[in-house]
Length: 227
Image 1 (cartoon, rainbow, N blue to C red):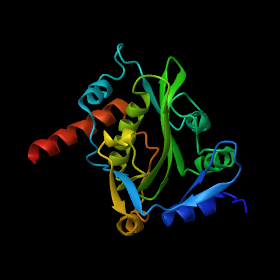
Image 2 (tube, rainbow, N blue to C red):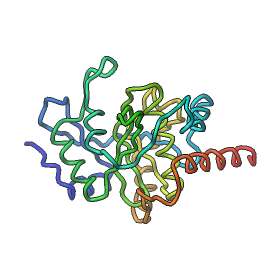
Image 3 (tube, rainbow, N blue to C red):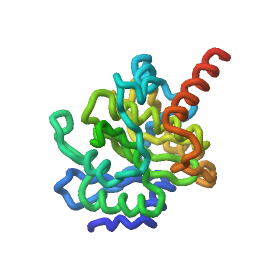
Image 4 (cartoon, rainbow, N blue to C red):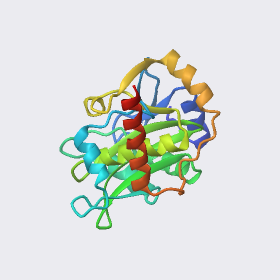
């Protein structure tokens, strides 16, 4: 039986720890997943490699001219995440998933962090938010470190807005450099249930992206020195 991914069904599923994936881009069927162990990244203290810290500090400088934008081209981001590349020959993002998350984006629940260069989209990520929880879905990169830069801007945004959870669903080698860790489904739900009730605004505009990241890195340095 084919699952119809309505916004209501998706919001209810994520609230219970489930998320959808397709077997491939060409397969119209979607399956629900609920891992016994959940991948997580720390919102307040995500590990950022030293070279990447240097890169994000140099944003807007001629040597690193990436421009970070929020929610300006969500559909292009999710389609880019669904593209098959030399390093990613299979994808779990099919047309029903693209359509469903675009609807969630229109309702203010799905968001994109985008990395642009010379008015071209060169990297980014997308995910969905409920209350104080953000569920990362996928990322892509067409230039060096573009998706990594987008991830740093994501976590800085989540921290500034008061989010408590950054769920990665699974762990992988790419996320290990950022300190990804696992918790049991039971512990995940204990953290998720109160976080869902916390009012957080993702698409705020009271601070520039550069200042947002510099502020986040400063608080990380302060916490590290204090400890």
